[in-house]
Image (cartoon, rainbow, N blue to C red; front, top):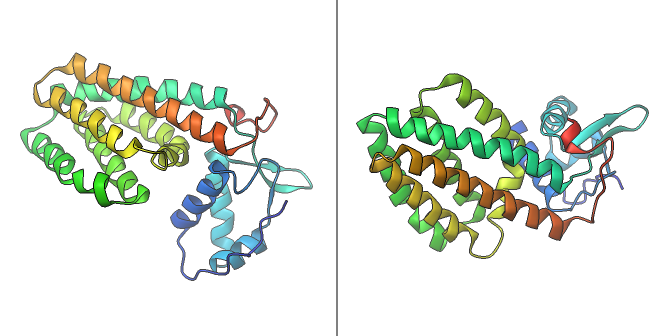
Length: 236
């Protein structure tokens, strides 16, 4: 299986947009493990030169979604539930620590900004698309990361979150997940505003663990069962 330009060229796409689209194609099973990504075909699909495509492949490789194989080029990697679980385990602990620190360290202005962001997002649950809610979700977590005032933890969390980004987006395509996510955010926010650092950490950990289960369920539903291999994302 090789990626073609069947969808037609789309002009002016940025690297971030191309990464976003291809990552979603891989996670949703539109591009299956073992599929070859041909740089020329991808460039034609998005209406760009091969230069941004090479950068795109680098980002996808860093996320563990593709691998470079000698004499074969860029191949879609095998995705395993175990690998996702390990990444989410790390993410849960990192985000729990950041939520605890944010509760203790965030300024009054940051508390107000987080509360406003959360309250203004309720319309997305009713009327928004999964991509729109995903952007709010990123902003909500990013504000907590920043408020924690812990540069090293923030850096580790952002790197792990980047690797998990397409899987976290996928959860919002599942029935009622946006409303449940909003409720989980509401509980986290309440703990932060109450100054309950341990409670905020516990709720954030539970939130990420729920995301892990939802993401694994989406992958299991959309991809054929995969065994561990040298292209497993845990090896990236």
